[in-house]
Amino acid sequence: MAPLATGFDPGHSIESARRALAARLQSAGIEQPAIDARLLVGAALRLDLTGMVTQAARQLTPEEAARLEAYAQRRLAHEPVARILGTREFWGLPFRLSEATLVPRPDTETVVELALELFRERKDSHPPRIADIGTGSGAILLALLHEIPDAFGVGTDLSLTALATARGNAAALGLGDRSGFIACSYATALRGPFDLIVSNPPYIPSAEIPKLSVEVREHDPHLALNGGNDGYDAYRALIPQAAERLCPGGALIVEAGQGQAGNIETLMAATALVLDRPPKSDLTGIARAVSARKMPP
Image (cartoon, rainbow, N blue to C red; front, side):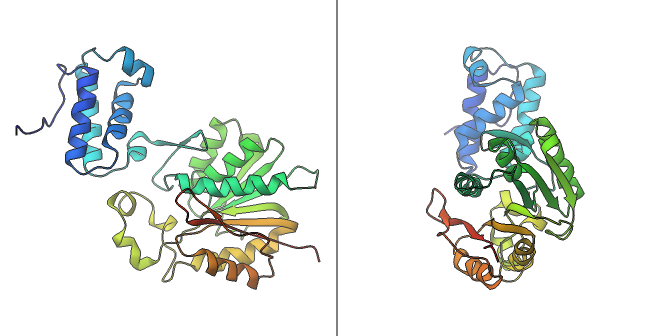
């Protein structure tokens, strides 16, 4: 069998370039090669899907061919497509990324889903206040503000770069006037009270990080991954802080790793938060969003 082509030149049509890139990615063992090829070709040529279809027979320009090959080499080195493009969709919204932020994942939308379920049960009429601990790109907080028009939210993070990224995303989504961002460890700089506190904290046990996929261990910030020896360091710190800053009836929702929900519920109960519903599972059946309420005195 003839070897696969290893580059692009202006003789390629858009369609042939897409097919060639998909074959190269598949040969390298990349998951979802066809989807990645479509996204990278679209980005390199600055075309949406409609443009790629209507211009399928057009030949690449020299600049487009060079840009596409540069993207291809990065993906073949297992750099995630979201990192290459610098953006990722979450909850139907576009989020810019930086080296200090996680790539938002569909599993985390489970936290947003559970938060919206809780808000539909609210009986209070005042504009809700939301805090997102370890906000990263701001994905969870800004998705909630997008869905709850009268809410105001605050995101915290240790990384100034992450906070700048989140602030930029808030401005781009038209949510800058309903959000604020503070540099601190977990909730230490927050006063409250808050109606809802959410967090996707680092929860990977330290010894497990070298075993993660190249896409994660080489490209996601370890500060946002490393949960300590047993994976629960962040929960031990943030759950008591959140309990102090919730208003009566307010809720804390955290993302959990596989098999962690029960231990997180134990930590929540130890702070006198009340477990009033089972964890919410993601689409793969993993208990992903764990919640508890602060009851009135």
